[in-house]
Image (cartoon, rainbow over all chains, first blue to last red; front, side, top):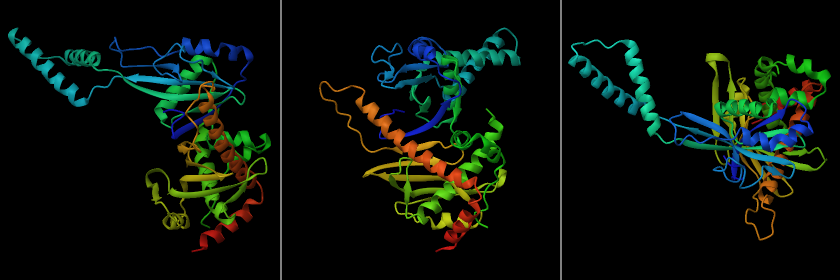
Length: 205
Length: 174
């Protein structure tokens, strides 16, 4: 989802570690190192990585640099190949029929479980290579002054993928700013045990 | 990061906050103060869900409508439910933001900022729309954080009992 869209959904994070000048200077290089890699010409089920915020077809950040004033803006691109279960079922039945006929010609009529699984894998791989990867792009903005990060999605699977890839790319961990973690950042440390022990308030009496 | 502790306390804090915010906004005449002392308005409107129970017996009621008065949601509160999600509208200096806040993780849905100028003239900074949009998004997050800070200050102080009494009076109205 685009940061410039009229309406957007967001998840907020704070970076746990101190972000040194050394790390900041390496960020553009690391974005390229962990950039998106195309799978159009392979049979891979999925691929993900960073792309340019201004042009999601650009994984080399040539269209525009990620640095925008005190922000670093980039996008997470995730391409996924999907096979409809009905299509897989059809081609599996066809492949099994063909296999059974071949066996019959050899005077056999028993198909082992292992062979069935092997055929299933082959069918899946064949269909996967024929399916076009579906791209999905989610914007990310890192405020380099506050070291807060905004992901333009609230989808939990995407959040997990983003958090892992962020840590892998920059060697930094993200703390999601959920009610508990945000509260710890807004109140004195002396109050933290109170936060841990809070019970739901008896609003109704 | 204590993720288990967080998972337990997120819903407690988030639901307490949104439930308080609804009552407090109506009791305040929808007026709050930002960190810099400037006043802004806050309304909970159009969409709200309340939730009660736990595990398999969780019950949720979603109330929507362009001019919803949330009578059903208030009934839910009287039955022990708490606000689970709310569409919040901020107004400051003639500008409007709306955002759907989830109590469990503070996920922000359908965040709309005041409109930005995306048309660029020759010589304009190509990043200008992005920077303006970020400023507006962060303005909204700052207001939300300040409200949450005000809530926490009350929630962790002995004044919370007085706040609960005022809440119950508000809940008994209508």
